[in-house]
Image (cartoon, rainbow, N blue to C red; front, side, top):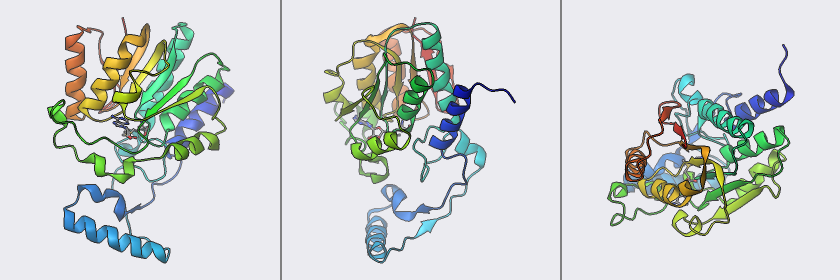
Length: 276
Ligand SMILES: C[S@@+](CC[C@H](N)C(=O)[O-])C[C@H]1O[C@@H](n2cnc3c(N)ncnc32)[C@H](O)[C@@H]1O
């Protein structure tokens, strides 16, 4: 077998970051609490806290097909990214294309969770010894915002802001970069709500714009503030097209600015296009 070392490294990074080298472990029951009725939520939370005092945990076996995990169709326990291998492959393809076509600009992901997709972006730069591009890591680092239903009616019933599973601190994400030896001054954190951080972000040009903020508002704020900075030939990648709010935001934005570049399918929820 003859494979270039940089491709072997990136392949191992994708499998490690997505945890697909190992079987998916059972999940503590507290993690899916946000979708439950209030009373059950309360009971689960009290029981979990009490058990925690004596270092015990109730976990639930996850029942899904392995193929679903590979395409990022589950919320994983240990993975540093939930986007799955297909979307990681797409990210690698987009980055390698902008590098080989010399499309100018830094890379950003808006909505990073444990940071895995951004860590992978940094790994690609490391693999090709690129030192003049940055990775912007934009997140509240405290989960999703409460919906602003007046401004974004599509988000009205979104309850994910109470979901602690989606809230990962900046320190934890920094540590995740550190684990892979990839935390350095090419990585720039933008901490806060997108509506506050993105309009004044110190970004001149982008060649990779990856959106993963789930909601209509988060998707629209990312597009409005960052798409004008995306170079022609750069890629706009959408993680959440299967979510109705995100789909509407993308469609509304493309219609408003008459963006006709072909939107291609990555997997059941991932989409991307090359800016013309
Ligand atoms: C589904 S997770 C992202 C998954 C991640 N890209 C990965 O590789 O696994 C969504 C993230 O978006 C962030 N987020 C969503 N809307 C936001 C907003 N308006 N401002 C700041 N962060 C936001 C949440 O905090 C959360 O970390």
